[in-house]
Length: 147
Image (cartoon, rainbow, N blue to C red; front, side, top):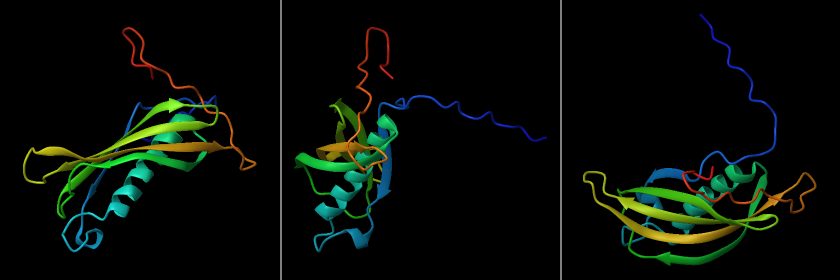
């Protein structure tokens, strides 16, 4: 028996999730001579997670405009899992500020530590390639999730 899935009704863009989580394994080709993740690799992973969170918030094309307050707190060793947690923490007229935390997990234990964090600013683009408005950030109210 085949079930048909009803189409999603068209409507205004709305956020679907307050955060985006992406997990990777740190492989040898991503590490330096110390056996730790290259900083540029971490930035690339973080920018990608920020991009996904921003897209989910505004459902428009986005580009990275600015990276601010990048903080590496400990080395990220080869053979560990990294989980990136990205959350839109602010909006402007056409921009979104996304906080990204990269957590390091040992594959064979429950140990989990913050490896680095950063703040990214992404701008939404319209069909003409120019900045376009984004929905305001919905903050949690009493008894609500905000999303």
